[in-house]
Amino acid sequence: MGIFSRTRDIIAANMTDMLDRAEDPAKMIRMIIVEMEETLVEVRASAARTIADQKELRRAIAKLEIAQAGWTEKAQLALSKDREDLAKAALVEKQKAADMAAQLEGDIADLDEGLMAAEDDINKLQQKLQEARARQSSLIKRMEGAQNRARLREMTNGARTRDAFARFDLLERRVDLAEGHAEALAMGAQPKTLEEEIAELRMNDAVEAELAALKAKANPTPSPASNPALAPQAEADKTES
Image: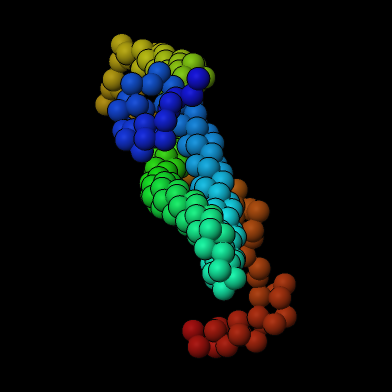
């Protein structure tokens, strides 16, 4: 049994309430759309049959009108031959054809009324179907958004993320321990005395002097005699002095 028992149920249905009560709104909206599409096909098929019936009735009426014209001609012929009895019989048959045609006209009017109602139902069903499809699209987007947010939460709050931060915490702990160990080694050290600081300065001076001597020995200053290019300048310096 379908969700909707009649076309009017679909037209009058409040999809918002139906989806709010549904345990699985996505599944419910799919079922609603399928039912609407099937109902729309049925209503259109019914309208097509009605149109076919109307055409058949109009053809029957046209034949009855031809028959009426034929009985009129026969009645006239009978009167021209002084056969009033035959003329009356022909007119009776004409009236029967006219009555049948009138009845068929009434049937066509009823079918017209039903066809107008079917057209109205089709328009409303199409509107409902568009609404349902729009709701389905909205539900799909909302579902995708919820799934993306869930994945993001899993990435930020999941076990893998917690494990990674736990490893960071462990590394920070190790660094803290190393820094604490270095600070602990410096604790309790005696400050240098004045004599120790002066001795350290003298030692630094001695080291600097020895370093300068080594540099001078490694890079000796060339004498004028050893460099012919400097000899004229050296003689000039002596003359001036």
